[in-house]
Length: 229
Length: 203
Length: 122
Image (cartoon, rainbow over all chains, first blue to last red; front, side):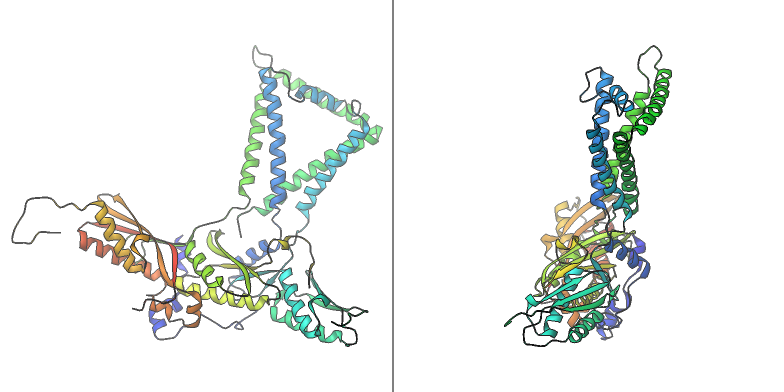
């Protein structure tokens, strides 16, 4: 804990500096260094954690499943050790039936349970292996690590596109994915609209946002317009 | 920035997934291909025979049961314990302290600044903003260091970079007020809906 | 309190825990700008000396006013860290002076913030 306290914010915090009005670094303007990020290693770790799924939910399901199975096995073992009749199936009988497969069980049941197990196994395996990127982008900021949900980005870009195209909210739909932004605009009938205007506006907004990874913009103008919007 | 063990999660889930896949595939094959059935019966009978021999050899002196059962029970308990510990690690990491130092200044005694200070200060500053639908602040301990997570929910159409710059400026003000720079994560979110789907559609 | 030097009275001065606590809470409240009832004081024995442990909020300027005018921090007495460290010494001095008890240490934990817009100006 003392290591944490060593990083005192010395210059701006001392009363003498404040009294003389030389607040050096207390409040830099927003445009100071938009590309910078604080304290690289820690920030990168935090951002990597925030932009990928932690698989905590799958982990909980897996843990509960295994605990359930183990508790059941414990129950059967305990029941057998005490000498009582087994609850569902006795371990010995279970083993004997297992080695006799596929003889004692209908092939349909076997196949279906196999398929179910395969599906569950695939679920867990894919969860483990796939990267699991969340619908978020990183925004550059000199003081803090910033992550933005794609919905927020899409909402801001839609507003900008709407203003650039001079249409209503219902005529604009923005889709934001990791590397691409697709802007769908339905123009007003009788009012010509150039896709390049909208594209320039959206790209300018994206550049201001300083997102990483910076997505490409594609503007689709619908062929049929909205009448009287 | 919580303490959920991500790599461990993926490893354990992967192992479980692989095992289930193998068992499931085996069952399907047993149901469909007779050759597999014959191979399985021969192979598993051999294993079962070896296991029974092992159980026979390890009986209690003068008893009828093998002590391997006890070993099995202990193993099961161990697995249950490990799973419960694994469960408990998910979502850890909330903390309460921002700054702590012992014997600072002339007088003996430790000085601690709790996370509540930053939380209340930031929440008060973010409370009356018209462009936000909500704001939460929480203290964590990440990589041994205290850290803050600020979650803001902007209204429709708010530009995230302007919002981020303003919140960042508030954080710098907080640095000046507290006297220590804490690592901060700002999450500009849209509420619960952001978890699903890769592409986000918004008007 | 010690008796005047001229007369020596037999007897024994003992300050009740409650009185000590009130003194400590009042000293902390004044040093940190919060009402005394918000301060929690606990006592412990530290090898024969008295150890004081305080849990208290602290008055701070609102962050938005600090953004507009960085000198507000100084107007409140400086950053929280400096104020807490200074408060330690001040509280120890006050408690010792008013009660005569020998304090060995003062632990302070700032548990919360009381955001003031009309600030104290020293």
